Image: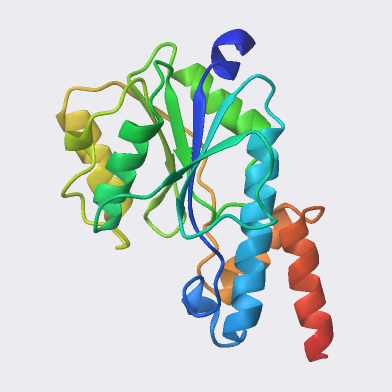
Length: 216
């Protein structure tokens, strides 16, 4: 791996402010809206900490809402723009672009590692795009050498076929695409258990254990 190239990428985290009733609503039930928001905040905190651990990276948080104490230092905070998720993703790539390759992830995979993110950035040395498929049929990471809204706008989001539709859009545009391992997004309580098991030392896993302890 060429570490220098990887570290010169712009890493974007696209996220919502963890407000009860607005985030992780599929965790309710069994969790209350407040508990679901707490888990979302823990997932976001872990994700930001992982990105922050990559030295000399350009770090961007594309945020719907207001920054809170969970915000790690060293991030440029940009407001999300657009209506649907496809438009907001396209805008995040456009707004964050600073002449470097772009690697975008969400707040739903707190098990992500710095090594995986560096692998994604390094893949952009030899590919036009990099794609991280999610277990639910979506995607957890998308990397591009440069922004192009046409690669995202109109792709149906939050559906079982979203990942394949996005991949088809990239390949249909003639891009070479590198692939990363499949990861699980935190959407349901079962997902949360799987993700916590994959990263038992993180804040997300600790928060989930606390929620379990309260219920027993």
